[in-house]
Length: 143
Image (spheres, rainbow, N blue to C red):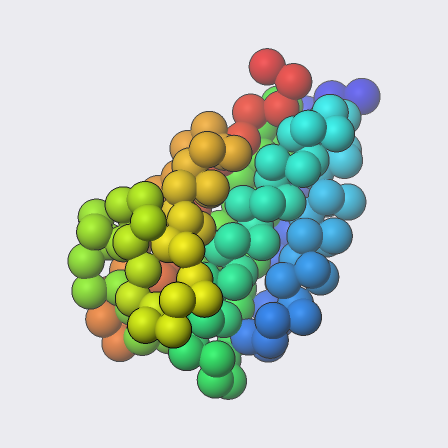
């Protein structure tokens, strides 16, 4: 059954790594109204996971904060935004380059934005130092 009217989901969650899994599950259930394939669900869950993880690790540097997730669904379209009010990204273009990371420990691969771009149809990042980052993503379902 197709969704004719735009339906919206808004969630605020603590910037805890365990909320990455919570966000994945919530978005999978929310997008089910669009009748996605399992591959489409996995793609979106991966992109959401990367965006939430970026907010926890980079946006808030593992400290306290709120992550805002908003999603809307209509027709064959899913839009998702993951935003934080953390430290911001000094150079968004550089940060979106594959393998680029500010992590000095070697634990992070620098592939978060690359995964988001690979699994979603559109990805747009806005950020301001000291004000936070917002990642807007779009996926066309069953197109």
